[in-house]
Length: 542
Image 1: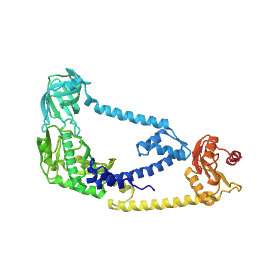
Image 2: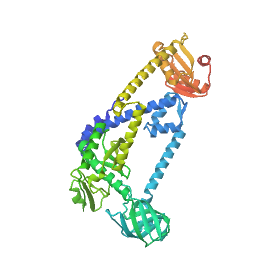
Image 3: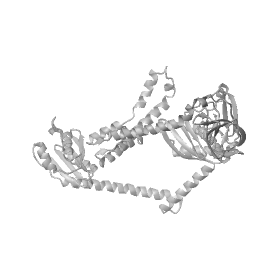
Image 4: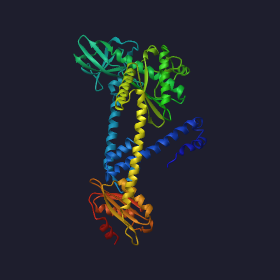
């Protein structure tokens, strides 16, 4: 069994490189824990991936490129190990299909990046547009003037669909993980829907609009109205994320640093540095703590300070933000103070309620918590109630309290059935072994073709036979649906440079229209058509 060991080297590395990397020494315990957890995860990945791979290989002589890519992309199983294990089993991998799936994934990622970065790269017209525009945090409706119109990055004087810049706006532009506002722009001659808002290169809010009627012209007076209910839900979630971070620092540790976030009207997520999974009990404590802070009804205050002065306040600063000379600090009670340019509730009590939906790993040493607040939290809890009622009905439990006992009873029954099945499989293996005869001679041989015996069962039969007849040659096959799984075992005493289990398997699989190979003592393969094993083996050995 694989055992983690890399974490034991941290102290040595820290000592050698302490002048260049002093944090390795000061944070040795945390680094050791993170490395140890990553090694455990990788060992788990290898174990789980190998089991999945062997399951896939049972029914396929050639592992498809899609399956190989799924193991690599979804389960993190290295393609090199997939190739090695397949080869040991006398099977192959469709590498052309794997490379094709890999290239498709890369193209999808490139297209996604292209879409995200398209407005950030901008055109010369947008880069040169410097007319100032202001954003009003508190307004939901503002009267403004159209100062810029752009279609595909080019400045225009009128449009029905495209990007609009106003001299002042109540619309929050997407940034810092918070989604933008949506709403309407209205003029006596036209009306347009605002679907999203981003920042132009010179930081003006750019509204993407589609006109329901009429045409927007440069210089038009406009009434800008955001979707106030949506904004309120976004504010609830953003403030809830701040309180969550404060609670994580209290209950998990000061090593918790923001690694990313998303804040929307329906849910929010918070990514943070943490080497190991947070227990369910600790999550419940954090959830209760955030709800307590909500009930404290602390006012939200904002301050705009010079960057150096702001740093002295002890406010938390997100890891990936770039700051100008002046920064905005949002305070939500005595425990939460952060650099933030987003929109927030006026008082923590306006968040209403808070619930943690999930906690998971998204990268090495980075966890993600997804949360809901306000009405979304109520709806989430009602969904859980409905799910619990459905489970209660399916288990025929008299009350939700009885669900635990019913589930425990079913799991115990499942384990008992699993044990019975394993016992039956052992009996079946012994029965199959007892049905075989050994052909005596200078090289004792056991040769047989079964009906409807799986590759896994064949391997178990070979293992059992090796215990009874170690110094022998064993060649087994079976008709399993449209495949003929093959196993060859040869004791080292009979192996030569020209003859061993791997060589025999390649020849046998080729004779059966399939493929195979493996080690000198044990090899696996698969055929597509039957042969008389004993006659074939006699011809080969002679």
